[in-house]
Image (cartoon, rainbow, N blue to C red; front, side, top):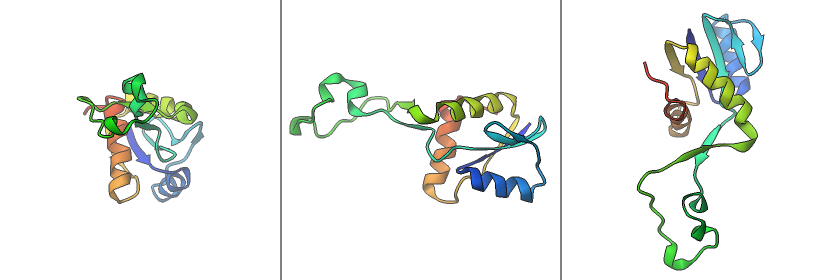
Length: 121
């Protein structure tokens, strides 16, 4: 399957129309050959300091620079459903086209999702 990953639902709708991809589904547009899905901006985010260590729950100036040895990501609570849909689509995909906004943040949204969901070609 060829999967297009957009940043927003309206962006996905526009792309699907332009590529003549039809078939309205839960969390994506398309079929078994081509699909367009969306990230609703950020489906995942960085750990908060207290996710690494509870001692960072209350800020202290002595702890101001917190640099973990490994940066970790977590699911955005309100967007778990769309993340699961995207993960299921990626399992079927043999090609992914990042179709997010053409800026750094858009690129990061797409690439972080691929990394988090462990998609490899």
